[in-house]
Length: 445
Image (cartoon, rainbow, N blue to C red; front, side, top):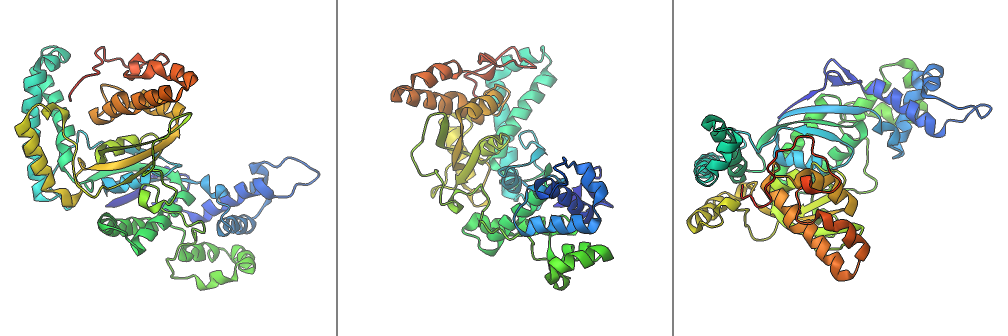
């Protein structure tokens, strides 16, 4: 795994995060919250920056972190540019809030041998890539030839991409990828503290497999001075005599911080990473579905499909792994018993590496508005991954509609009806910026 910081970031100096300048800004933001005014005059950030010393600002900024008043330290965004990061670690990051991310899609990524991927996975990927290409071409040749204006090279390239999308179900969710992840400074520190809870006490085999990658992630962030540790605070405070004199009066314990990589943020609320339902005693993943203006919906979907849902930060997602292993089966195989049987046998042979086609139980909670406007209007599309498109067009939205109808909620039934069994281009209030001209509600790829 490799980590670089966006060199254009506001607090990046020589490739590392400048905690001194960041803490000054935390002090400015905190002053807006509780600094006393003079003659009831309005206070602006520029007034604070010009009227207060580094020592006052840093001392105030540190105080907010120590006291868990962390909104002032949510303004200092940082962009982590990670390469070679396991997909599952991206999913952990993407399940938290207050971030934006651009991630290399594994849907159309060639699989090459590497330390994350076993020879068996690579063999199965290559094997099924060929089988999928042949099956798709035999059934959809006319469609792709028409789409490519009878250019067979372009048509076969399009088929190859769809085959890749399905063959990757054989590959571990630990497959390496790349991500650009922008997040508030304090938030990435909170996430690392949550990761430490898994490192210190893994609850199952998956968490045990995650431990070395979580350790590596924290180590990389510490090397880039992103991690707020006792040692990094010691360095900040002791880099300026006036700051040292001011802060030591409030926090004399900092004098003993040198050399310690203990986190400053203490997680007094005992929060865990949000992806794993079994770490949440309030989880609805084993409860009945609920329908109304707010929806709680449980289903089974692959790791790959869950990763698609992570692009929509307006809903809350949790997952757990069922006791019995079973996998997603590409729908183009559904009428071919021999291929289905062969697929099941092959993916079962790599179940110990958590292939992306493994089915996991997922709970999503969100407002009905957000499910329609920010998930349906993105994923209910014939260009989207088939599994998530089918999940929303054929299952989630119709089930919500039928349940509301059964409960007699006539108002919501009327509002929801135009979205049932529809692709987004058929929604009454959606305008597609790049229409394909051939929406396919019953496609098999």
